[in-house]
Amino acid sequence: MIQHTGKKQVSELFGSDNKITYHIPRYQREYIWSKWNWEALFDDLLESEGAHFLGSIICINTELDSSKPARLELVDGQQRMTTISILYLVLYKILKEELPDATDQDRQLSLMLLKNRIVVSNTDKLRLTPSYTSFNFDDYEWLVSEEIDKVRVARKPKFLGNRRLSKAFWYFHERLTEVDDQERRLFNYEAIEGFLEKVNEAILVKIDVATHADAFTLFETLNNRGVPLSAIDIIKNKLLGQLERIEPEGSLTRNFERWNAILENLTEEYNVQERFLRQFYNAFRQIPGIEVEKAPKALRSNLIRIYETLIDRDVHGTFDRLEEASGIYASHIKYEDGEQPEELVRALRNLENVTGADAYMLLLFVSKRFGISTEEKVKLVDLLCRYFIRRNVTDTPPTRDLTNYFMLMIAEADGMANYNYDRMREIILSHGKPASDDLFEEKLKGDLYMENVGATRYILSSLELAMSATRERYTNFYARNNTLFVWTVEHVLPQGENIPQHWVDMIAKGNKEEAERIRASWCHKLGNLTLTGYNSQLSNEALSKKQDKKGQDGKFIGFKNGLALNEPIKDVDRWTEGQIKDRTDTLVKKALEIFKL
Image 1 (cartoon, rainbow, N blue to C red):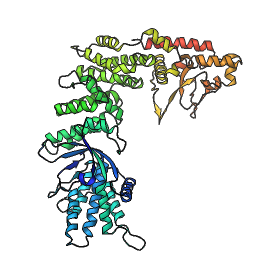
Image 2: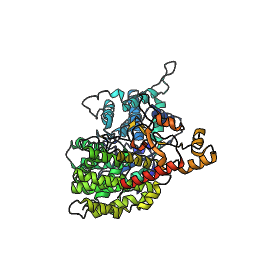
Image 3: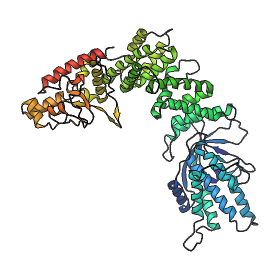
Image 4: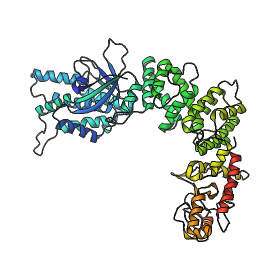
């Protein structure tokens, strides 16, 4: 994994007598260090006695011609290396302007060597090339061009002074030209030379690796880096870098826009983006040219290696496939954005609410492989929702097996000449290994809320939608007001151990021990649960207050809120153990019908 590692002085990394260069991938994140970081670095160097440890950097040599000087990609360490380069530039500016004796050959030579740490000797090539993101490259190139004649820039970047590279430059300049109350310089020429020596002697651990996958695995274990790169960043840099090498100049911007469009399809959530990359491989690895040796399944641990291999093998084909697949994926996870039929939108909303992540892998495959109709997709999504709610309630099959089972489903479905729902259902039930009806019923009759709050909400909302199907309305029971659910799961008999006296009197004729037994045995059962307005704050209220509670707008938000679920409890004057049992049996029976496979 590691090709070489060693402690290096900064003067060696920015060696004036070599032609090694460092580049930060064009579209890696921008320079983000701020005054706090600059101050800490400056003070640490100033107060050190030399050989101050600055941390580590991780490099990959991207120069394919071994006869040419190394061109090192900074996979990790761009903040430190960019800041050091800016500090060198400031030191060069001050020492050049304030050289006490223009005929002092030793100091002239020292100044030339310092310049060669910023640009490669006898060239206009920058020793370090920053990211192009947020004008980092333009700003840096301009700052260098102002001090070194060989570097020429057509025009000054707009709003340069508002951005961090310029602010870093002038922060260090201000520190090194600071004066005391008597307007005397705190750093004379000799002091600045001494500070430069401390910069040169500072230590970085340089780690050379062969691949981006190796780099990612390595810096996962390092604690001294700044903002860590993600697997998505690494894969993006690899893909865009490969395309930049083989495509005409000017194509990089277009490819970057294509990549961003892929991410936009996948939402801004990193977990969704990474899940897509894993599911893409797992869904299509049987296609010739996609399977990677020793990678039977995409995992977080091997994701970068898989995509490095695919990009090296066929960068254009990989990019095209990802672009197409992300569009399909978007239609399933961003179902509200397009103009999809309402029936499909509701089905996909249910799939999101039931948290059946592996279902998206199967849907991606089926949609790409067969191009199924809206009606067929709704039937398939509904089946997957029923499968997952049963799985979530019973934990059968266990989470650790789900991806493997869905990959088996895909392999089997790939053998179909044409899509057939009945055959697809057989495959899902065969390879998905769902729990039996008896186990599902047993779990539904158990302490459902305590076992799985999310599944409870899904079951109650599904029951309500099924029971009110004849009414001309649809309610989204997962709608939110800011971060809070508009609808909340409510216990009829309060769930807290300190049962109010009016409830003790109702359910146990004043016997607190009996009331506690009933509460412990029945409060989390399906029959004691319903849906009410999120702001009702019913909690330990008396039954009558829970029934009649109204919101600020005068509408019922308690049990008289109009839901079919609440019909049996909205007008009762008592709530007993027997009533909870009967309602549990009724709702469980209905749930078994709704979620039948």
